[in-house]
Image (tube, rainbow, N blue to C red):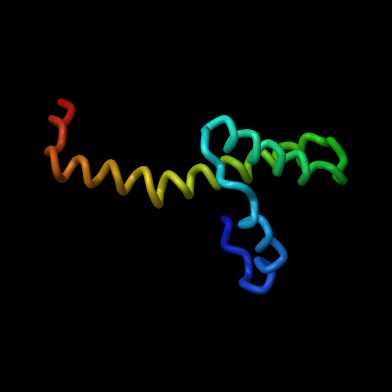
Length: 86
């Protein structure tokens, strides 16, 4: 997943210098731009295009695991679970 070595992360420190991302559209634009930058010097083959979309999906999965799922668990604990199936 996104856990590259600490040393390798340093070259991306300037990403934090970007202006504040305020909207979903701006976030999507930034993600799409990063994907285009990744593909810039790569052959447009299925495998590299797939790698690009797979990386974006893995990041979405990790974000969901770390943030959205925890929020849902808190809401369930606060409000009670829904009735089980069957």
